[in-house]
Amino acid sequence: MAGYMVEKNILGNLSKTQVTVLTSLILAVALVLAVVENMLPPPPIPVPGVKFGLSNIAVMYALFFLGWEKSYVIALLKGGFAFITRGAVAGALSLAGGMLSVTVMLLLLVLLREKISYLSISIFGAVSHNIGQFFVIILLYTGMNLLPYLPILLVSGVIAGIVTSTLLRFILPAFKRLV
Amino acid sequence: MKFFKRTDIVIIAVILLVSLASWIIYDHLVKDISVKAEIYYYSELVETVELDRGEERTFSIPQNPKVVFHLDEDGGIAFIASDCPDKVCVNTGRIHRVGEYAACLPNGIIMKIVPKGERNEDDADIIVGY
Image (tube, rainbow over all chains, first blue to last red; front, side, top):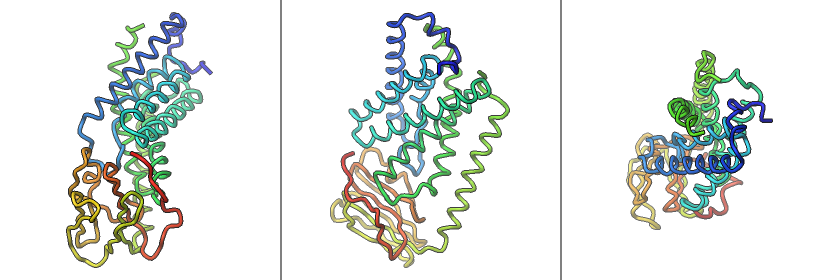
C-alpha cells in the first residue's frame, strides 16, 4: 500500500516520535489554514461551503509524505475541529468532504502512481471534497438536487485544485527542509 | 511526480465540458416545469410563494422580520437582507429553477424551489443544529 509514496525515504529517516510530531505539526497547519480561510470573505458563489480548501494542502502533503493512515487521521481530526468550533453541520460537511477527498486522491495515487501530476490530484481532491460535502447537504435538506449545482461544484473544484497545487509547489521545498 | 503534465489540460477540459453539459441538460429538463418557492423556518413550512404571476414584492416572514426576501417579475426570488454573520443566503442571489435553494442556517431559514402541485415525499422532517 505504501508503494505509491512519492518520497518514502522521508519516513525511513525518521523515528516514530518524529513522525508523530510531524503529523501533529501538519494537523496544526491544516487547522490554521482552515481558520484563516474562514476569516476571508466568502467567494460570491451561490453554494454554501464552496471554498478554496486551503487546508487540503496539508492533507495532500500528509498523503504524499506521511502515508495514507496519517492523512485520514488529519482529515478526521479536521472534521472534529470544525465540529467543536463551528457546529455539527460544519463538522459533518468537513468530515464527509475530507474523507471522500482523501479516498479519491489515494485511489488515484495507487492506481496511476507516477503517471498523474500534483495538479490533477489536487483538482480531483477538491472536486471530490465539494461532492462529499454536497452529499451531506442533500442528506440534511432532502429534496435537493445535485444536478443544478454540479457545474458550480466542478468548476470551483478545478479552480481550487489549481490554487492548492500552485501553493503546494511553493510550500513543498519548505516542507522538505523540515525533515 | 510532476506538478503539471500536458494531460492535465485534457482533464480540465473534460471536467469543464461535463459541467457545461450538465448545465444545459438541467436547464432543458426543467424549462417547462412551473414552480413555486417554499420557505421553511426550522423545518416548518411557513410560506409558499407563487413565482409565475409576474408580481414584484419585498417581504419577510413573521418569525424573523430581519430576514428580507425579494420576488421579482421574472419569477426569481432571493434573500436580500439578513442579520446573520456569514451572509451566505444573500450571496446565493436569485434562484428560480427546480432544485435550487438558498439557506440562512444561522436563522434556521431555508428557501427552495419545488415543482408546483407536488408535496415532496422526502421533505425534511426535522433539521437539527447548526
